[in-house]
Image 1: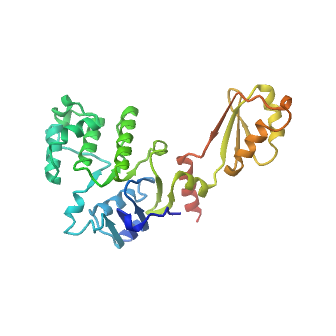
Image 2 (image 1 turned 120 degrees about the horizontal axis):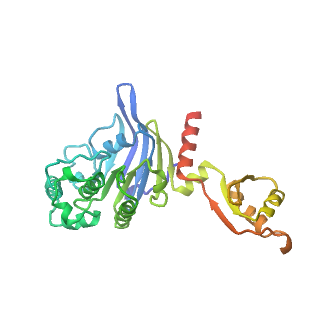
Image 3 (image 1 turned 30 degrees about the vertical axis):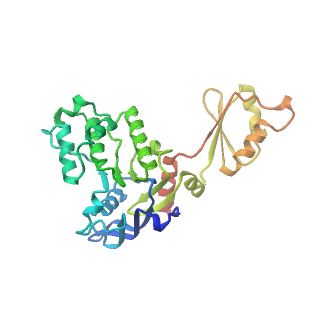
Length: 319
């Protein structure tokens, strides 16, 4: 269930990694490989192991078992300072000194990271912090402004690897869109991005792969198309029909699909993904023109990431 990545090109390689605290596993037997220019979304409930795995890849903790390589080296080693300068991190819970201004805060972190400060103005503009806000004390910032400042901090030095833990918390829809545009530009420039979020719906279309975590284990890994193929959840076809045609639809579709009436003259059919084209053909094309259904609108709804996530958790619990 893991998408293959060329090991020679991998920026992150996690092999058989477990992290145990006493008798409790935070991460258990995880394998994960990521390539340059790849955005991977890691999803899972609280306690699934996402943040623990990020801490291991950052070198903040060390594995109980297995090994981790980031940009070719061990991120937890004493000699890994050159690796850390090429890694950006936006944590789930952001805390800055409230009496420092936005500019002072970013200058401070640039100095810690050894990154030049002359590009900070461009970073502020990139994350949507206006010059007036940059001069204000962070203690006066809204949650969304602090989140944007944290993103600017993570982008210091143009990282080759970027870890983002719940990065859109506190952002309005427009700023979320702007954030994902930034992520897209970074990915196109070759940055490896690992994105953790509870907001599964907004991840669709943003990540090249999705990794599903549960109780410290990786239970699925692949593109949305791959996960849909693995899950084998039904596709929903929604038709808007005149009321008279609704009564004849069941006879037309035959076996292999369920029919549900929705409001506004909409009928929803559920079928296997491999059957959807044949079903649409039977509904709209079969028979002489006089007997064909009058379809005002048609919509094909694929299983959402939320639905697939719930499916994989149910399957894991059953096993």
